[in-house]
Image 1 (cartoon, helix red, strand yellow):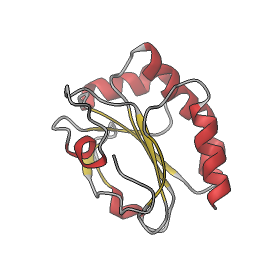
Image 2 (tube, rainbow, N blue to C red):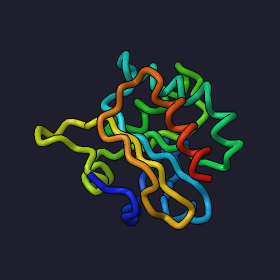
Image 3 (tube, one colour):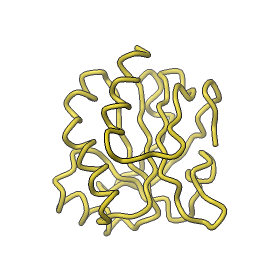
Image 4 (cartoon, helix red, strand yellow):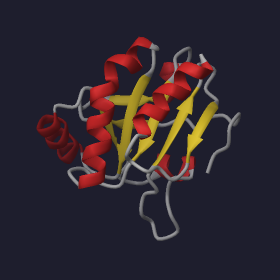
Length: 147
């Protein structure tokens, strides 16, 4: 798992909007990258909806939010539509970003984790084993504290 101060690994992944999203394109902005196990599962739905419901506060800080899982673009599109999500979900089918960030467990499953990346592209904070309840509020508070 990455540590505070280390450079965030760059990634280029396809999003539910059928565009490729590259982390380094957001230099100069705060970025929240959260890894989650699977679309349309109870915990992942609660987490995604919490990000959705907090998005106006997050965007007021200038932050960009990406949710990343191994699910397909088609799965992400259905999840976004069903839950009316207002941020981009990225498909990491090969686990490239997940491995680079240290969000993959030994069994190959995703460790629910969140990374706050500062405008210089370095890790500003890490939540390595996320408990869904209250997590997005913690992210927003930390983001505001660090700005």
